[in-house]
Amino acid sequence: MKRIRMVIADSNVDYLESFSSFMRHASEGDRFIISYFSETAKLQSFIEQNDSIDILLTTRELFNNSIPITGDATIIYLDDDVVVAHEESHSVYRYQRLNVLVSNILSIYYEENEHAGRMLARSRKAKVISVYSPSGGTGKSTVAANMSKQLALRNYKVFYLNLELLQSTELFFSSEADNPSLQLFYYVKAKSPQLLSKIESLKKYDPYSMVDYFDFELNALEMLELNSEDVERLLNGIVETGTYDFIIIDLDSSLHERNQRALLESDQIIWLLSNDAQSVQKVTSILEAEEKIFGKENILKDKSTFIVNKFTNEVVQAARESELVIEGYLPFVQEWITLNQSAEVLNHELFNQEVQAILQDKVIREQEGVQ
Image (cartoon, rainbow, N blue to C red; front, side, top):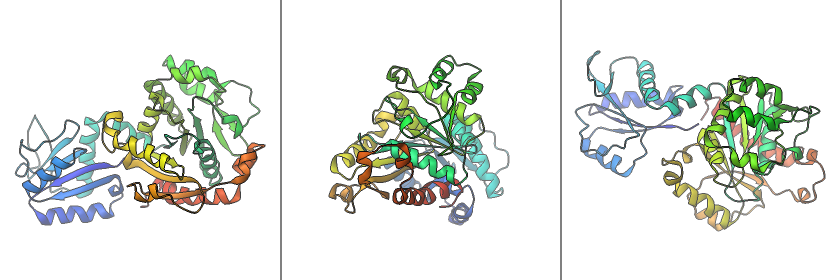
């Protein structure tokens, strides 16, 4: 889940400490990254060095127009009066219950930020996870398929969505249904009100993995024609069926607009790295250019989990020296080089033990609100 970066500025230190204590224990607290300031000079210095702020909650006393707030930040004033009329600004009453105060802050923020509002509404229905790497051959599809099956084994309802240019879905999942999922693209592009019903009728179910999926077959042209709005419409359609706990998106290595939109729409991104310098460099380069590519700094980084796949027990120097925080390791499986059938990919005991450990620590715990 993309966390909200909030700065709180108030000369009343006792109030800041009370707010901080509440947020550490509140159920909403894990959705924020918060910085606190009681002096204008320190506030201004911080903002000048950090332009990726979502909310500035401040007293009118500490804030002045010389502080360089970016256009994306929502400014909300803390006022001492219950009703303060300022048509040009947003404000909240400081001396209300803190849980109500936080709700009021979020209400203003989501009113100003429609995309964030959609993400909030969606996060209550299904968690969208993209498996991505800018390097080919990192095992994205293998990891995405295994994550899907392992989540299903925990009795979650899972949808596997493959948006690769060249599909490998049939290697992992199969169904007796003969309805071609490919015609779904027509309903997506036509903005058809029948989209939800077509998702239900064109999806397939793999009884072995207990996962739902689309079989788009090998049609690269259709994938190339999927634009950003199409992907958003398709994802929201799957979510709005109200069926799924998790949607796992399997992406290829390109920065085609369908992949960019999937990453932006995701609540969490599993970045896969090979244990080599080139893979580390590619991930680092994309994150350094995040604002140029995606329009905002930290919009991906804040919801990213970095995993090394095909690990052989020794971390390369490039990974040790990078700023990437590696949060999991998946083993290299020698027998997959001579793979014969999908059951071998989805039924490797050691690999799935490590997948389960990552899911429990980095996916399910966050879904349940445990940090």
